[in-house]
Length: 43
Image 1 (cartoon, one colour):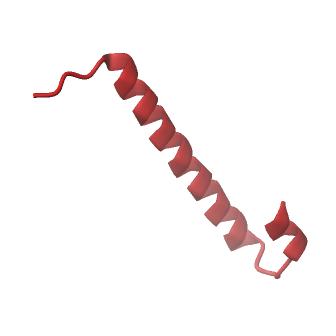
Image 2 (cartoon, one colour):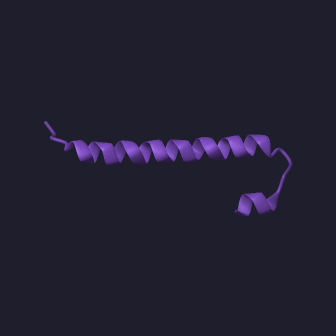
C-alpha cells in the first residue's frame, strides 16, 4: 500500500481546489458577459 505524507495530500488537494475555483470563476464570467468581446477573451 502507498504511504502519503499529509503535506503531500494537502498540496494536491489545494491545487485541485484552486483549479476548480478558477474554472468556476471563468464560467461565471462567461455567463454574465453574454456580449461577444474579443478583448475580454484575450485578457
